[in-house]
Length: 206
Image (cartoon, rainbow, N blue to C red; front, side, top):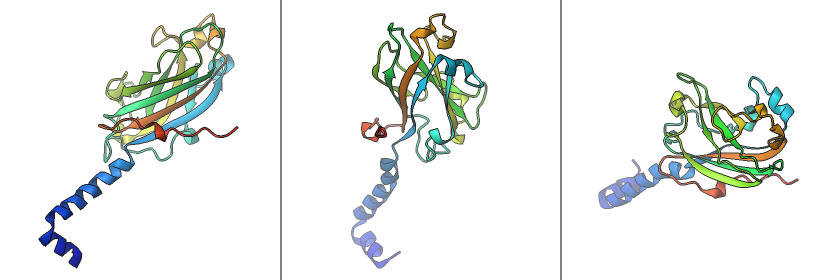
């Protein structure tokens, strides 16, 4: 212990306590949320029919994922019990105002039971920006993921609003869903924190 700290400990114990609290809080304050992915893409009926291994899926993998995402989502920062903020910007959509949504599925490095979990974006009928906060402990099969082992990739599935099996490519009126162009961003917010829109990435200049 340096002479300065010995002096502070003897004469100003409140200063030592303040330094401890500051050092404890600072990492969390700097890492209360992170961008999991931010993708802009056009999706056609042909893309949906031919996506592998599953139709109607857009796969967010490798460089499309944030390489700095945590390996453990429970510690030292608790994202598992936080929220996911999804921002869906629908840039192009066919005419007809057909209700549309996307299932956003977490594919973990290690799962249990069915091994993945999903939430849905807001249902939309037109172009525009649609946002929602989703509790990480509330969405479908969220407990089928071993959050301590992290997330490998994400699957985005375009659907109608009929339920989980309403894949858009199966619809006889698929022209109401394709082609479409969207920008989707998912920001993970730690437990006890609130989404800060200042973290939203600035789209690249065209």
